[in-house]
Image 1 (cartoon, rainbow, N blue to C red):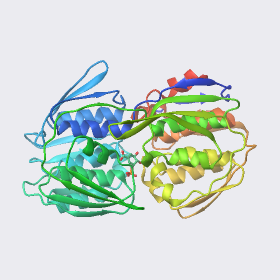
Image 2: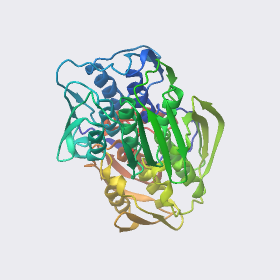
Image 3: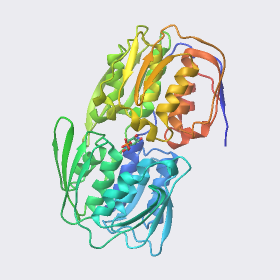
Image 4: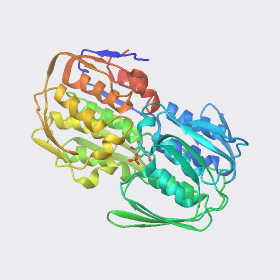
Length: 441
Ligand code: S3P
């Protein structure tokens, strides 16, 4: 479906408090880990989005039941042997790279063949980054020239591996961690820094894990084949979803917003650190530690003297899903912003680096691109007039949401296609934007 929204007015100034939808990374990890626990798990505030529904459908097809109640989802695991599909089956991860890559890790010991499928966007992404290490555990894995469909048949005779994760991809690290959970002996991982929700959940569930954190890499050891019990968990708000509202507020006149109950894990805080470096008026208050994750309320205000940023490479992983919205901010900042080594952006739900550069040029911003490095020439007076259309972005939810924020803050008469893309990560996006004062339908 190509349903579009039209936005022709900037948002009026606002002063509001909201919550954003729940964290997608944590929701998917909770479902997968609950599927392997002994007994009942209750996940409160689970994100109700397509990626998460596909995670529930996948574990169900593999033999694990769940029930959605009013405030929580109950998942009935029966240990590390929970998956019991009697014959070869297909599962479909839809748009979700996280689900696809992580569930493959859990299938390294699965007796029967599982064929993993995805939507058009996911079918264009590289799976060799996880299929190669999973083969080394002893699973039989075949792909379609490194892409989906991937067929995996597990082995009874798995052996632990030493694995070096060099990209800074939490999906790759977590896929191997979940395979390690199913494998007798100790798997050793050296992983370039990336989001660490899987490690935190392992610790919380008392799965034997040792972590030694160094400046650029984390060294992780996991002892496999140790069962753990069902658990209760309340998923906090997603900082990636929050980021659109932060930029909306910063770029709007005389506005302020409080976003309650957001995950502020340091491995995801790139966006906040970048916004602060750009001179944005932003504070985190009421911090609490919840089962190893940090949660807090974010207070943000409009800022009219935004500064360009020289974004250090080491921030790339902790802001990996936020660069599109950061580019928009750079477009309105004073000075030339620079970004380095953003090749991973082109490996997401859409080629976000290419799309980001095209978008900036479309709105009249000068960009110099040298391979995966960007210089964005900001224009604080940017104020669009005329008609703009945004389509053909492979239904990438983050491209859609970034464009809405642009339309609401820099003007122009916009037609933005593929509204249904938000259902993968942030189904309430339009509702929340309207709560703040926009009139999008
Ligand atoms: C995710 C990790 C990131 C991110 C994705 C979610 C996760 O991908 O882009 O949206 O939940 O582990 P990579 O780990 O491949 O960078």
